[in-house]
Length: 191
Image 1 (cartoon, helix red, strand yellow):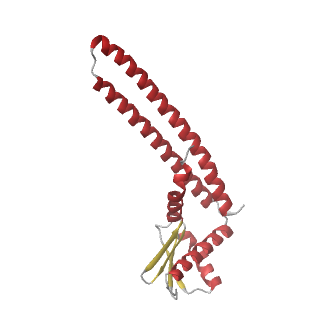
Image 2 (spheres, rainbow, N blue to C red; image 1 turned 135 degrees about the vertical axis):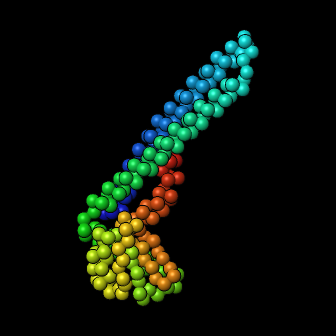
């Protein structure tokens, strides 16, 4: 199974789980709102008898709605964090061959970005996670690319390529964040 298929499978599973979690959160929220509305009816009946202030109820209903929104937001956050955790598990479980292939794809992608900006990448500085330095040196040699490989403690994986004043960040963290920003609206569309 390719990395792209694994990524697609993880995101599809996460989407399904997200739908379930959000559905449960919405059901709980609707229950809270229903209960609050039933309480409102009771209060109105009591008000007719005892002239209770309507404002008191509206405050409680607003609080119930606020709690419902918070529950949904918490559920979405938990889904995102679980998705992020699973993606990192996949990344950490890659074989050396898969890591090398991943670094090659990210490096070539970075070079394409630089090329599209009109930059001829003669002398590159490639920042990588400390455990990826030897793989990147091997890769640069294999591809015949002149460059310096720098261990960067801030990078968990992937590459950050610098050519002159331009930097292309293809680290796993950045790519995951970008991917989540693109996918989250779709992930949380619950019909």
